[in-house]
Length: 358
Image (cartoon, rainbow, N blue to C red; front, side):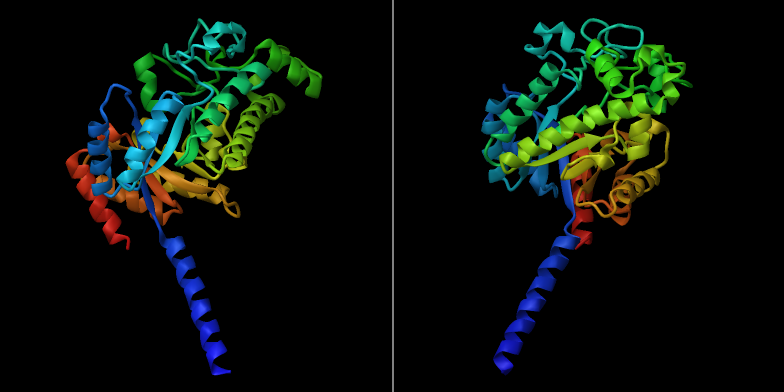
């Protein structure tokens, strides 16, 4: 009888040890944009640099090119890195297919389309998440990336509406004051969205006394983005891939600024871009925003990986502090924007900080 008891003890100990190991694993990632003209040798050198600096995963923007992604996955994998396929989702600058369909684009409260009247910057070319054809186009792009062997996830970016409010530090750049919701930055009032909203709520948002406090209209748009995410989740999992996303700092803030409520999505992991310098905040805000997101996800399987903006850090001491603040406040990992901004000193700090967590 003693032997079975011993085996049971060893089995239980093994399960406990594995669970403990999984619980304490903290991963390090980096966003990077690919260039098809860059040689395999140069990519191997780049990926090796990341791995040697403590990085575990790369989130690669191939401008939604599955062929380029297929080329890069084995190169990164060989260096010991996991790969995520980073896609600009609702904002599709220069999308040759979408540009043939002007009706696919979001329309502002002023009645101007993103097709030819772009808010803030010329690369803001936002597709409507409600219109069948535009959302199916985005989901098709998601599926093409999900089919690529060896990737961990399809990583959604710009999975939201245009900024109704910009981060405070960016306002002077555009000579703007945004104390209220301004009509030229308020989207989407296209015919399809208005028709779909009227069908549910029997009123036209264009005739609302104050759309900024019309909760049904706001929720309609939150739900439109959520529906795209949930469909993308089903597609990714159909191909045995995960779905992840770069999102605004924490759900309430994302809701307010860009019509994005990511704590309600079907999604495996989120990478909130907690770029404290964008909001004129101190480094401790990294911990605050991470904690807010973790609290909103409590009881859910979705994991948080805190996004850290390298140019916004004063020194390596702040880099280390940001990493530790993220971990202490519920993050499962951190990701850095972006690969080009990481100095040798940064990578040394990341590697040393990672070693200190073991």
